[in-house]
Image 1: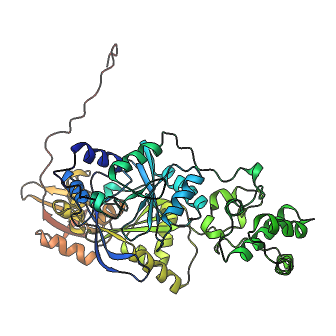
Image 2: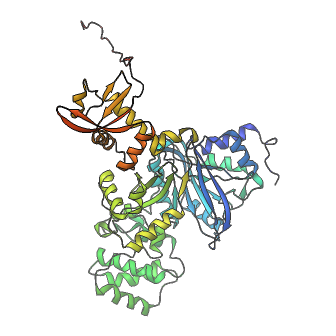
Image 3: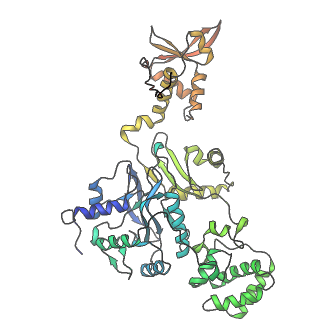
Length: 520
């Protein structure tokens, strides 16, 4: 097919593509491919550029001009108009996936990813909370047998004012109709960009979202049981998983029908396992299940691919309170300030961390308790390091804005708080009031005096850390400050003297609204 060049492409097509995939408007992503990993996925460096994605960048993406454009689906107000299930599996039966989406009547559009996997998109006409997108796509992935896949938006909330941007996804149709990142028509053939617009219109959702539902309880042989077993009984157990699947059905039956579960397991094998296991293997499973009260093997195939733990916990014969309750930790981002800031998802909440809080497990746990009221369990040192390495491997780094670098640097923040302390806080009326924790300004010599411990208290109240006392002293010397003893109230006090910042002479404009009829 011919390439959709900037000359040939009508402006309305470019506009329509932008309208469908609009996301965060203050940043975009790039992914520079460096090599191909052993699993078939293309490896490279992901970077978030903290600048608005221009029309030119969108056009170059459709023209196939490297690097391709990545858009962050979550917006500054924590809403989205699109989301995606990222299926990293190579090779992948795309036609079979499209057929399963249609069979389950899910309003999703399947696209081929740059590495040959699939990006399964959900679209809405109006912005919806990012958390709703996450829940919808997780439920849909469980029904598709793709539970545990990456979901975009990766974050339910982002801290934009702190430099956080979230994770981006590389868009389809890089290179237009001539590219390999195309959508699939319902018959499994590659869709042109114009045909993709038709798929979008056929599947875009109105609000509120109607969340995907597992097989109806009344029709399911696994009533009030794990949704994974419901889906597997409806769709069939994948090859090589019949034995483990029937073992978990045995756990369900032992809970739901304790007086007759052995006979029912034989019956379920015949009705719901294709082809059924030989009777002698079923009898071995009966003996195994009967030995003790097992928990469901949620992490093993085939259950893990259809897992919907949130729904399962609500079921009478689901995992209930016995399921895994460790916090879900994911989506590490780094903002390249000085020092760097880190943003991490813990149970869907965005947490800002310093390097020490990320590197040291005890400091990380403390941060989670302070900010989320959650205490993650202590992991073995090797497990903690493995988890960090996995997060760092997939980390997205956000470039710092050059013109804002001084304000967001450690030195810049220190100077802002120093100026605030010496000019905006309550001032000492005379030199002795320095003992009350107030800075005193000598207008004749344009110098300000204060005690270091009072400045330090101000910094702590504003959650400023990162500079030791010697480093703060050096910063003060750098601006012409010097330590000196002062005689205050008849005793010596160690103080600092620095050049005064500009004085706020004009009063702040505090407008008041007069109420009609009020005498005041």
